[in-house]
Length: 96
Image 1: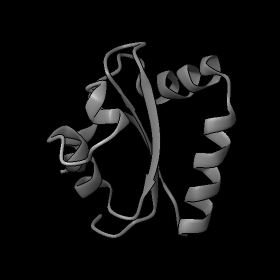
Image 2: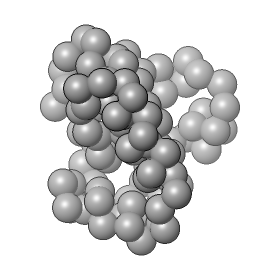
Image 3: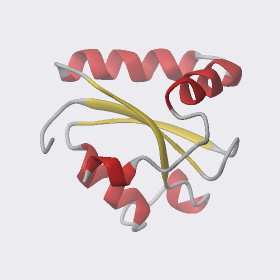
Image 4: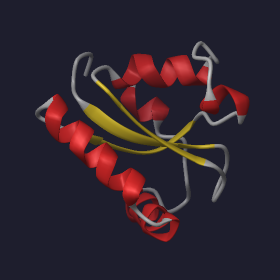
């Protein structure tokens, strides 16, 4: 899964602060978040648990999904996460 358009949600903890992002290399990008290699919001608030992700055929569709999610109410995001990941496991290891 080296180069696959993806949209993802990170969390600081269960029901914690959320971050939604998009990337073409999910494993690399989550590693960067986990190792604080990227300055910004996720580093500042220790947001590094991968709680949801979705693979896409094109970067355009991944970007559109990210934009849609960012417009959602928090309750909708929590429902999306809990449908796939009800116990809020860190899904990063399943990617490796």
